[in-house]
Length: 637
Image (cartoon, rainbow, N blue to C red; front, side, top):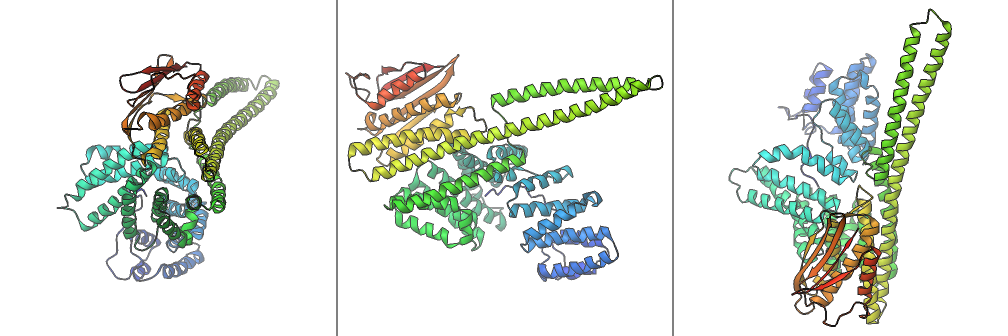
């Protein structure tokens, strides 16, 4: 997906003859063969990789007979790369790992070649924690290495994005190359999209499209190779735009972008359906499902299932889409079966992802109580360290008096043993504390994820019940309940996606909640603009849930009643800190409330719920009539 990943392989080019293997075998020294092998980028144009392996094994047998360990190391590093080239990744990894166990005997060139082979092999085997370790070792050898692509594979998109920006910022500030800028903003937008920051991602991807269009509109001095790369990149940018539109529930607008992405991906894949192509098929199937074009959606889903290798890599999304398809096709039994598969596999994949994060030691402990505990332990460790240093000083002074008193010698030995025990005790305590904090962070995320999944199950059950209910009033009540459940589920989703589990960034949450509600009414012709200002509001879950439910009721009421006639207007949401308190303010420029409206006597469950939720926040809801529309506001701690 990310076309901007840095290449850190050795500089290569082709030899001048037609038979690279023949040239290789004619070289007299192992070092010359080693340099030729990693210098030649088209070594298989006359002889296959298997022929190379056979020839290299013969040369290595001679080196083993002569007990030439330096030559053996170089031949094994070349063999590891050949095994990778033929697709035998397990054997490549084993050969390279066994060779690297002798790293103290290897020269720098062999170490670098082995680590680069391990980096490629671990990526193919999806061992991203080991790939990260290999990259760090390469970095310690002075190689120009980036880590953000591995962070992305581990699911740490925010950290990957930050390193990506740092790695490319200096060149971005100085270059005028539109193709470079298009790649940069597209990759940055893709990271943001995977991290869930939809609106910021859309901004960057739109900027990428502007740059790629400017580049393609001025192709006077552009080579054919660069032009083809630009065309493929444009397809990738448009597919990302399509995904943004899809996440905004603008399914009709998303389809042309996604189809353009599929066309570009097919050309780039040269007839082989890559993971990107299959993901785009899944996105198109979801769009057509949401538009109730079940025939086309089924065709895309059948295309995914045709390639068994692709099914394995897209099973989670495929099961979810199949469940939605059967639900819309009035087949709840099949829908329930696929939904259970989806939940089970999703939980398994999420656990594996969290395990990778823990193994890579990249997760930061941001909870306040964790910081305080670590700080207390750090102070205790420093205190104990000071005590140990004092004891060692005493031991040193006692040694100088060894000739005068043998008793001092015994005392010194005892003191030294005691200090060693104290050091070990401190190290064990520190390790136990760090493991406890890591486990706690993982468990908290697991809890929020489980709660979100359970709420999604409740929402799905309400959807099924709605399809089987004929009473309009019952359907309305079920839909309102479903909307409230979704508002609470979104809270827990934001919590387990956030690195800081103690607070929720309300700007992103309100944008997601408003987009979800707006998508329900957009199909009926509503064109309501939402103005959200909550950048400074970071709330805990006890305050975020009431605010989310209040907004769910108010936004839904505005669509249902305030703009029922015109279907056009504006909604203003303000949630920011003023002094020691937060101000919640909601306004619309619709038709306003009836003249005789009284919240206590209205009998409206939604308005009574809003009032009670405000009371739950230890505040009182105030309703003001404005020249156009109505204003709800209150302060809370």
